[in-house]
Length: 124
Image 1 (spheres, one colour):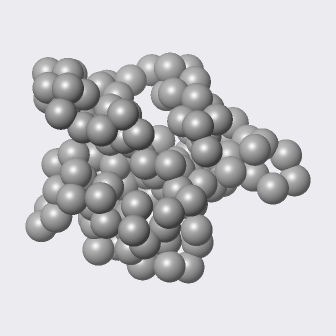
Image 2 (tube, rainbow, N blue to C red; image 1 turned 135 degrees about the vertical axis):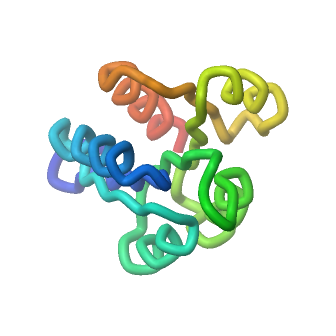
């Protein structure tokens, strides 16, 4: 919820420019955005800072985003999790992932990403 208690959005992407820019977009639009660059770093962040939602790149070093999504559900059950990947991979994933883990294709326009996360948060 945007307001006194801002929703916390974690962006996990190995590409620092994408992660940082996406977290900044959230921060500039009323959310508390934070970036992590690996699954391991994401776990450090969620232990200290319980996110409301997490956007995870599918292709991460060592542990892929799909595995991270499953583990995050256990570690942070109140966090809404979504995956983000290149267009053709996102279409394939959307058919195999459960309904409660949506997939968004990148590149994604900031307006579309903000609407996506707003909808994701409504499913709490």
